[in-house]
Image 1 (cartoon, rainbow, N blue to C red):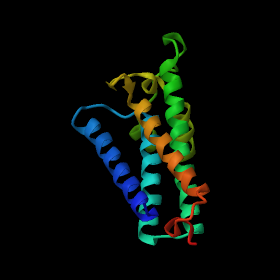
Image 2 (image 1 turned 30 degrees about the vertical axis):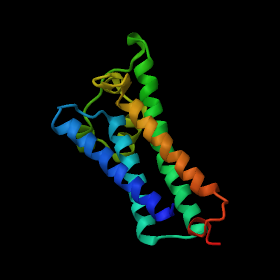
Image 3 (image 1 turned 180 degrees about the horizontal axis):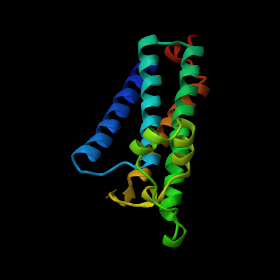
Image 4 (image 1 turned 180 degrees about the vertical axis):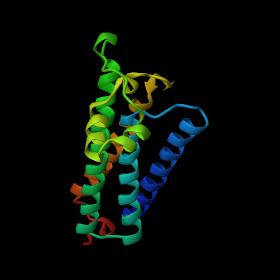
Length: 168
């Protein structure tokens, strides 16, 4: 399997996951919390890295660098999903208070404060409004981010003989 094919599949998966997120928001009426928005940015980052890799079609060191970028962007998304899963596991009396919407925060707060508030999470982030096969939305994003991190690390550390991946 070539690196271009792998990155193409990753790009399509990221686009599909973002499509599902926007479907859940605009069709199902599920309002994304600040941590949900950050997870979307994680998938956007992984998708952009993958698209650039597809267009560049790297060999050898290039595959490893794109693998590193994929692992880093997906790892950041995984950390955010983990934070949200932790908030969802808290007892009701320990859940932080609900905060303002992301749109409102972007209108009235500096970007650094919006990011800080979003990373802390709010009571909205602790709500479980949807499940599939027993996993909440951040549970599923954690699964996909984990797969992307693993794929990026395999590409980073792959030392096989395939010329498509290692250039030699």
